[in-house]
Length: 197
Image (cartoon, rainbow, N blue to C red; front, side, top):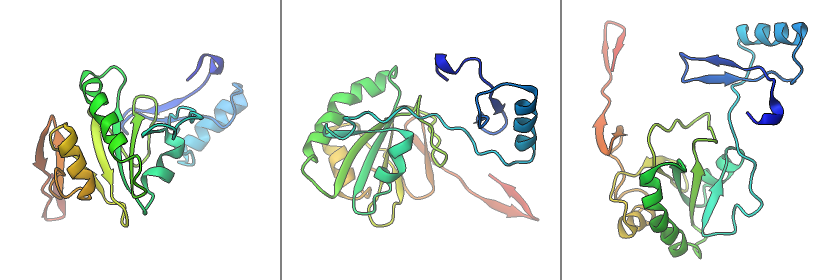
């Protein structure tokens, strides 16, 4: 929320990963608050997601800049492998990765079938992707848009192999999740109608 939006009204569902809802109008009155709460309780509101404005020069550098508003169009382009770094500006590991990631972007800058991109995940939210650690690297594979998490070394050669192989080298095994650089599997058991994770 920016300074020019204050005072403002938001509803936040703490039990749903901090889902935020914003009224259709910035006006605060008894009628607008009543209408907003009624629509919320009826389940008619769409979640409000943060997005930075799209920079004019977002695609001028080898590493493309994504924001929430252009993410789906770029990441889910079925004609390309798209590697996206989800980063936080304050993250030390992200800062260490930055020069390597820039070199990776330069390496593939002339390729029409590969895009290297980054998104500041602290100010851009996506409905379909929740990021819990930084940096997170995900490959959106061409043709089928499979999303493959990167779990290899953060070095140029390994990242290059990951992208060129379509996520076959350095990606997580199917069904695995990253936690602090270690992967583990979720197993689903069905026991008398009860799901156990």
